[in-house]
Amino acid sequence: MEKKNIDWSNLGFAYQVTDKRFVSNYKNGAWDEGVLTEDATITLTECAGVLQYAQTCFEGLKAYTTEDGRTVCFRPDLNASRMKDSCERLEMPVFPEDKFVEAVKAVVRANEAYVPPYGSGATLYIRPYMFGSSAVIGVKPAEEYQFRMFCTPVGPYFKGGAKPITIRVCDYDRAAPHGTGHIKAGLNYAMSLYQIVDAHEQGFDENMYLDAATRTYVEETGGANFIFITKDGTLVTPKSDSILPSITRRSLMVVAEKYLGMKVEHRPVRFDEIKDFAECGLCGTAAVISPVGKINDHGKEICFPSGMDEMGPVTKKLYDTLTGIQMGRIEAPEGWIVEI
Image 1 (tube, helix red, strand yellow):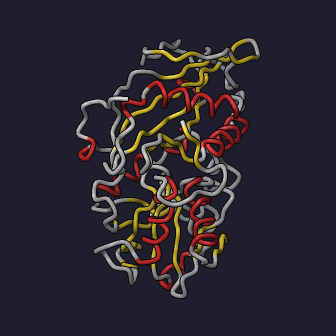
Image 2 (image 1 turned 60 degrees about the vertical axis):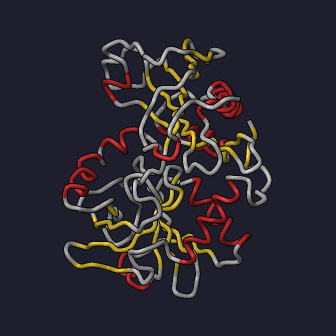
Image 3 (image 1 turned 180 degrees about the vertical axis):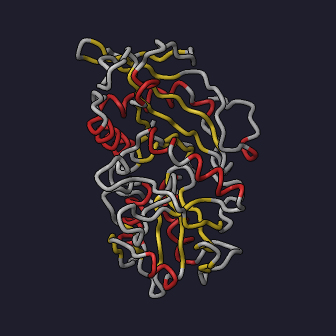
């Protein structure tokens, strides 16, 4: 298929409208079959559940062009499963997981001209989301819902690419114990906007959130999980019931152990042990891995030995291996790559 006339190598991480999106409605206790549509607009009652009580959740995944020219997606079944968890926590009807994956395929096929070419550094970002669409004035779940999925070509999430970033320890809490931190609810991201804008104004790239109960354990940033590398080459990832289970982080743990022969620890990480790590990074669908060069703790800087010039050597191996799997340069574990 002929690609759109887009300057792929200079794309930012921003929305641009594409040709088709998928829409399905839930009414009278059942989902309809859903359709692909050219209409990018949504019409809602002023009293819709999503507008009154933020009853909405979303996902994020990507489609790529592999080295041998195939169009593929990375582990969409895990996005379907995680959205199921989000819906159940927010008292929303679950969109069937198999239909979720089929919708991903349909949306990518319908917009294949927007899938960036191999080697451009760009990808097709896919955004599934669901919201309460019927009128709700009392505090209760909506009765009707809409599931939608659109896609848009994007460049790197951080403009500096793999250049190490500087983050700060945030004084605000991201998620409460037994709250909604473990699901991908829109409300989690709304409450982080003040902190991220303030961080940028203060010269930092991101926030590090600590656990709300004791403020002694590392949680995550506003939109990514942490990974740490010890001085003896062990991958350590923070564990908490209020951390979103990142698909990228879970994949990196497999890559570290099965492909690179590393020891892997998924455990609570005390903030006071961060100074002893050799490398640090943020991981997620949008950025894959963004290396962290230093953390500012209220004026006190924690500088990692990997420095501020380039990604640390172990983190780079993890990044190169995972992106190699995604782009078809390295054989993937069974079921990880779904061809469109």
